[in-house]
Length: 493
Ligand code: BES
Ligand code: ZN
Ligand code: ZN
Image 1 (cartoon, protein in one colour):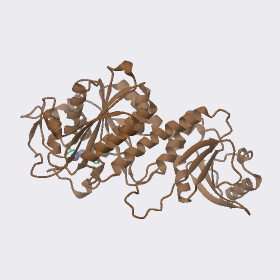
Image 2 (cartoon, protein in one colour):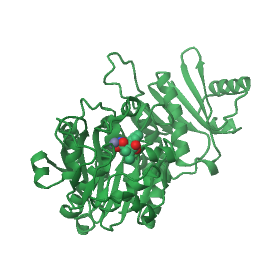
Image 3 (cartoon, protein in one colour):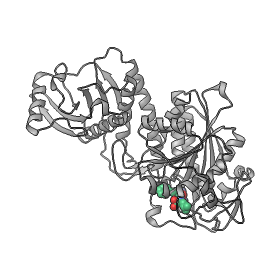
Image 4 (tube, helix red, strand yellow):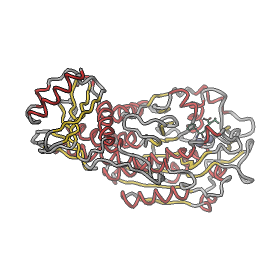
């Protein structure tokens, strides 16, 4: 879908979206729309008693002898209350309506100034459009899903440089998020660990970051036994995926590590999940997808940062080879772990990936992102990610990125008190805490392996996928994390 800025409307308009605030003057459209059409808009508004109420959308069809134009009236909040995220959601609603109407050329005409910078206006427009038209329909034998060809912002500003820059940036972010969505939506029979590694390789070639993939033999030699314990139950071999991007050659010693949970399927293992809990567990690699999408975005944006991303990709299955409840495994770090629940597998894979990244890739800051706990969903619901950190200043930057992207985060406390819940009598640590506070104890487990480096832990179990289309999110994967992490990394340039 093309997105651009135009100075005037054509004579024949396919679809026109008029954005305005409540009771906004219609005269502002006079310079743009021909008299008869504007009269028709006024008549429709009077007849229906519509006044551009915030977040409301109304559609009507305008006909004259030669012309049929679909007109969408989109109500928005007053500029003081209008955040970038609200604009994204409003525009997404309008674009979805255009898809329903089978529009091909959409003209977006704002009746007031959103009071966002030009760059932000362009960015949110591109993000809203490209995220909301996404649909995972490759397995539908018959799909008549069609998307518009173009979205044109109608504006008479002379200087469109920043607007266009914003549009380009929004496109990069949205396409990277859609890349992540594609991976997360792929079912686990298709997307097993080696297939995920292949997709990462494809992304590396396309977007220009470097990649290395370790197979089972190599992982055994590196003694990543915690990771391998989880992987053992599946006949699909695990892979360690290492992606490197160097945008700041002068800062070789401040590489940021991005560790994404890459369970291509989580059955729970011997602590098997009930069917309802298992149905969506192909999405247990959403952290990995977020990390791949982020690498794609930062490479395209050429951010001046150095990032190494690691994914320990495997499948948590049941077989005669699978790990058991009660096993003690020696992690790559040397710390021994008593496995008291085979469904708390993500943390086992993550800590070996983190240890590898610190020791062999020399990262100095750690971000892990994972669909880690049902407890995070219980605490914050399905729209908000839980974050635990040992670095409050860095968290403040993450919060800013969350505000800018609309990807909501909330901090959970990092009190050392709960560490005792992870104490084992016969190993250095056990892999579950008590019955309560599971999102925190999972994070505390991981913290034991970050060697006091600045660390952000992002639990995306809630927002990684959705069963309801809403705003710019479609059914299925949301691509959460890609825009958030890219925006955070941009603030660290
Ligand atoms: N992948 C799940 C967490 C999850 C739950 C993600 C719901 C998305 C939606 C994780 O591996 C898991 O099973 N965690 C257990 C941990 C428990 C056994 C300590 C959980 O949350 O129940
Ligand atoms: Zn699990
Ligand atoms: Zn899991």
